[in-house]
Image (cartoon, rainbow, N blue to C red; front, side, top):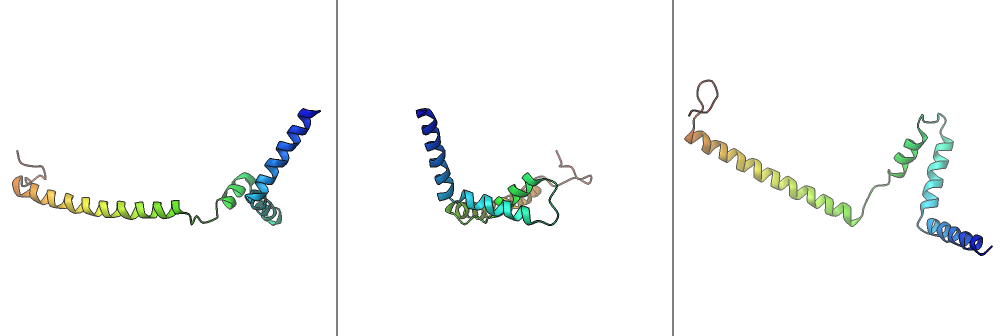
Length: 104
């Protein structure tokens, strides 16, 4: 009997945790939306996944990723410019032959 109470207590604690963190509200909202669909989607699981993932991220992680994208774009631009310069230097020292291959 004590094992049964411990199990109920754990379940209740977990249920409160899900409510407190908004999981219950999010799932309920998605399920209600699915229920109210005139034409049910062929894959209910995909529908739930799409609608749970539809919340835009505005966290510090998103900002960090945006910064990383900007940094990588700048690095890419620098590397493209460096590549262009190196190709020009190579052309000065090894002009292409008539068939497009480098002269030996």
